[in-house]
Length: 143
Image (tube, rainbow, N blue to C red; front, side):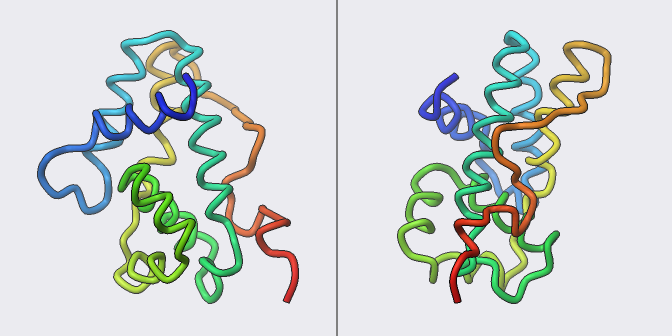
């Protein structure tokens, strides 16, 4: 799975009706990933961590708690590639997510649930990038 495949999977699994906390999106993603190989789950986890890490920047997260910032970044990802890229290009677009408490916490657990479904075991995973809030030292550097 490359980054294009990651975003296509997000788009393909996004429900047509409102899904304010991304619960249906997460369930659909888990179902799609458990239909494929374990390598797709691992690749999904890597891409998810990477895009969340890219949003972990001072201009987005100033003033938010760690959890609120993480769940809000997940909501941007759940909105799809076009929204993700728009927010990266214009941090003012992120404010709506933060102000309106638009969260997508269930998205964070998709790889773990898919892994457990495929293997029957919990996944003590690590990814190349941490998606935890304030872990992107480059994004928080400077004044």
